[in-house]
Length: 229
Image (cartoon, rainbow, N blue to C red; front, side):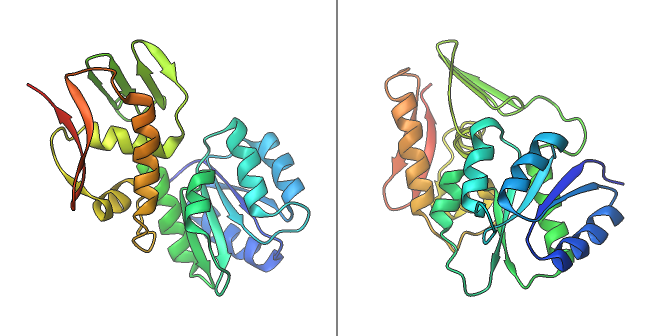
């Protein structure tokens, strides 16, 4: 049986109660908030392991809540969006959302997404430390720490996951779609700009650090972490 705490943020009480039933049945505790300000309060009080966050909320909308939480925490966030709303995937990713689900949804699907995100971030039980090291570079995904020349570089979670994935598979070429699928976990409608933006930011941090490795573009294909013998 799973353990952990899930926070559900939605102004629709029925949706909150439906999700509560399903999530508690799986063995998680549930905290509920019905507006954006309450969400920030409940977040501070309960320190959840994952947040289901509706976009259209009273007081503060989901984007603002996500932005505020990301200032102080890397707690995984799955955005809930109504069918017909234009979900700005790039904005969601830039703000640090880990996934999104479109309403109306099956509670079973939401539960599967929750488990997938927690599994991907290693929140379900103890796992071995995930770390790769190269010349002047250390990428620790367990602590979400990127160090260059021993100095920690402030790096958002998705950038960390992307560089860890590439550096764990040296010299292997990944297409953008593979990276979206394997790092983001779900297909963001094949929006490959997301990958490009994250690679560009990583390059700014890692350019010229060492001549023994490099983050390379393979034109017409994708990207690789190239290690020179």
